[in-house]
Image (cartoon, rainbow, N blue to C red; front, side, top):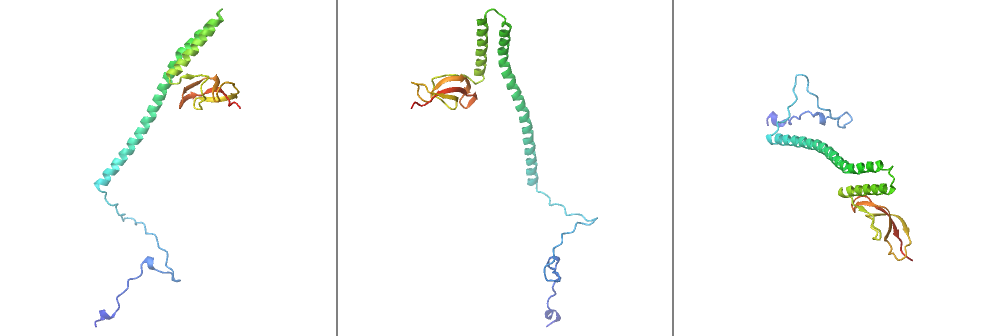
Length: 191
């Protein structure tokens, strides 16, 4: 046998992670060192054209979304202002007629003032109707919690229970789309 065959193969020296302390426990691992001056860090792996294209499309989509948010905020503000102006313009004739009624307040005929104020009220109710909020002040109809708000309950002989007996304050709008419900008095169940 030759010398090479009889000697056991040389073992490599233990790596840092395999080194043990004098007590036999593994030594803590050390953090990799930062490159010294004059040495370069390894450059990141080059990206494929597909990855760069997807990244570019992603950034463009984010920019488009940001632009859309800003445009929506501007348009929302413009739309609110336009709707406010439309509603205010619808009420201008009502204000004009109230001023006319006040101008005639010193007239000798109090009935003319009352009829003028009633006409102005009717005009205001019509403006609300055209805006989608018709007036509801019907009595003798069944109580509907979507349209009515019960203010009081009374005994009303000859009236079925749950019937609107009196409207104390009219409501405006349709069920599910109301400015306010009608405040009503309802008949109670007869015992």
